[in-house]
Length: 261
Image 1 (cartoon, rainbow, N blue to C red):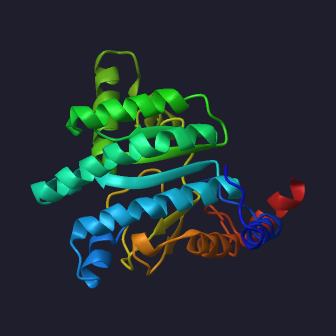
Image 2 (image 1 turned 30 degrees about the vertical axis):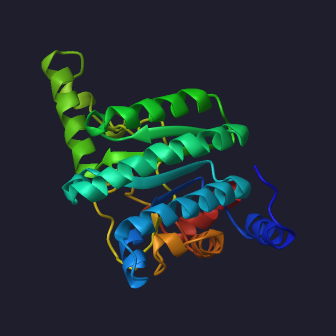
Image 3 (image 1 turned 180 degrees about the vertical axis):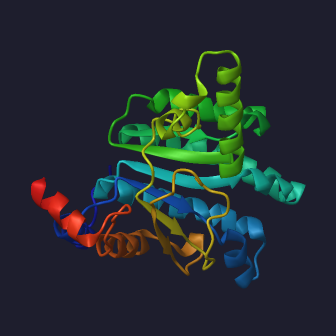
């Protein structure tokens, strides 16, 4: 991982010393098209510039010690966009995978993906599978791309899978609990997000990680994704550190639990 600047290192060390760094950060990267349109450019210009934000946030996350970073790269609903825009997005994804995989590997970052891969073009799948295979043993951080993904799609698939197991008598209905259900999601093995960041100024979660975000802290940033850089990530982490995560318990219980630890 590239060494941060002295000023950047100082900020990172302050964050590490003043509070907990979220183990898993998920990001809805919104606002590429609007950013470009405000500059009188085509929407695809925003998608291209958004790649630079991805590069900076991945690097800063690894330096901070974030172990999982999930990026909402392309939703199942995004297939409804104009064909020309979808084509550009797929080409950008191929180029980004070709350009960035070696850097991810050199920086000990593991790449994986979640979603309905059956809809992805063959060329995208080829590049994606090669990148996943090359980086599979890396340990610093796991970068998760949510591609052709939606939370409802994943939940429905899990229900179908569980129903099939019950029907075939490999699972009893009274054995179904949260752990069993979680093992049937495409995110199995990935911890639930501690912090969700959405850029672009909108206040919704857009069918993203619906099951997994039951107790995730939500942070909404007004900057469009192409303008979102590490200093904005640091602001989100600071905000996260100032919140009390009670998980249904009282403040007194949380304080007691911390003392026991």
